[in-house]
Length: 244
Image 1: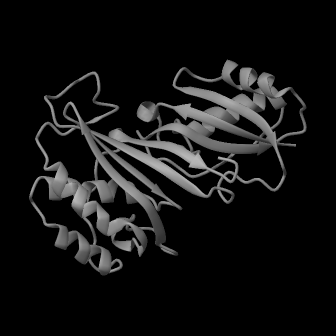
Image 2: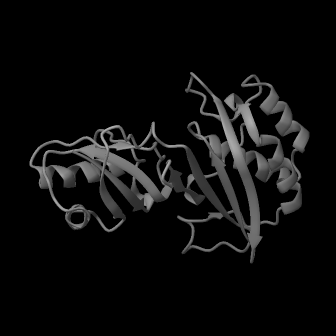
């Protein structure tokens, strides 16, 4: 039987989502809990990985099990063994053809930036930039990323393969000095969101122009974006499927 879970986690004290030897990871903590419940090793499959210090509001994973419990009991059982920075919001049985990663239609990420004075209580959750940015300039520049593009210039250096993605929307909002970047697309390569936001911060700070970003984008990887926003302000907000 296959179970789909929606999980929320604070990434501050994790070395990313994916399991790693001798490092605390979200996948590692969840699999430890599932082993106690199932009395055998269980491997979970997520919609995608998040990096160290990156948070998730609604991350999705699935796993297969021979143990039959009511859906609400699965949720309670997993949460019973969870540390206080991970919480299972939903657990439900799904068709065997469902796959957390390959069945996903689109994803939404959000990035938060504080232009106000440094706030030590928010440093793990909102990037403490501490200076004013030109919101209108960033909004105009963000439009160049909409649609289907080769985002090779805005991905991790060590990743190869298909870097073509479609960005459906890219909104930038500001309220009381906190800037929210909202990106929705059919998929994101590693560090892609942080490079896109990092480039736009440079535009908002008037260090580079919109045209420079466009040159990077059109170079398809020949001109790399060297600006990468810090991980602390990044959240995987939502993963959308057919029924979403």
